Length: 54
Image (cartoon, rainbow, N blue to C red; front, side, top):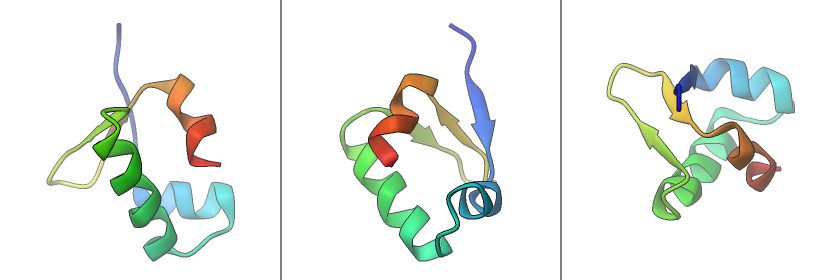
């Protein structure tokens, strides 16, 4: 499976939410093993997990 990445600022814009809200959502998804965050910003995410963020 090919991994896709997205920046926090892009998620913030897409969902019209604050960066802190994005971070909290990503932390929850990471704990559920739905995504992997990298140090340099991009997020590797399984596209089926995006709906869990909403």
